[in-house]
Length: 458
Image (cartoon, rainbow, N blue to C red; front, top):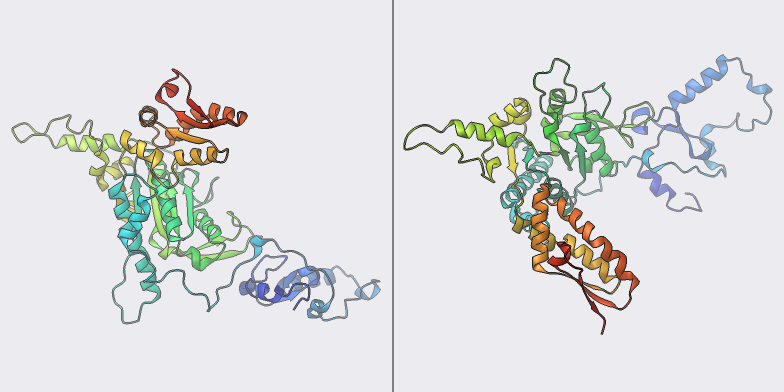
């Protein structure tokens, strides 16, 4: 044990040694030879090094100042040579038998508890939260059941991935982030627009698994219980009337099939590109929950066309414009609509759960402003509290902000943009005057008919 660092032996037992030349781990290259300065070499690289030197005709006996040439290489550990710091990304945590699983059957919260936790952060979208809660609960029950399954068990529960459809700013990404935080599982968020078929410029499909491994601290066992969220999935729809190879559309859908179904994938550790210098790790995607989300902007028109075709002449017919202004038109989506949009049937078959999110209404936007645990108004109130100033928003001002956000048609994202615009002057001017005690945001200030109401300290 190193006298200066008593935990040195304990730390080194947790990680595999990596060859300084070929970058292979000890589990792949075999036992390592310890070199001065904390370097390790595998036997293959050491032999190749000696062979290249000997083949060049170099005579070691004629070289002066070579005190270590007659020593056993393993004796280098006894020398008083300072150890080199190895970057964290080269360390791979070993699986130890003593480590207990992060989840067990009793620790998985029931669906109603998962939904109650989501309610504190996400406003509205009741059906989506309900579907999410049940899907995640069943998924992790399946993961633990497979780990503890007996040989006599003849029923194997299949994986149920989730496809989320909803307009921009309706909370798709926020819902997944909140869910991963509540369950304390690693989460990787990938953008489908950057994915291309293997061999082309862009990210390969395996890069999404590599991101999850990095989020799990390079712990393969923890990564295999994580969640991968692929955003903008509608951007890889099959291109219509194209004569060139669709390397960022249909081809990406086809390559995603093996990950969604469950397969062994070799991914680089500490990098998103495969090369000779990156150690590789094998990840089984069978127990990873995949959630794909997208706005599908043209899907509403496809659904309306299908629904309007069912109208006929007579007393039992439906009006042609019945679905033109239906805010919940996405709830009528079918696999046929998604296929017409450009998603291949094999991909849809591996996404059995389809969740639709509603477009946000004005009352929902008002609630988003003030109710969630991390609400935007609460953030600004906290900022001014640090200056010992009380910030108050009138109800009419909140309604004006919500109606203005609806006009911008970017969902909840518009709320922060509007607030940043109107709070800029307040955040700039308030710290100038230590006598200000309260700032009240009024509707007239937002409509630029006056300023905020200022109340001085007593």
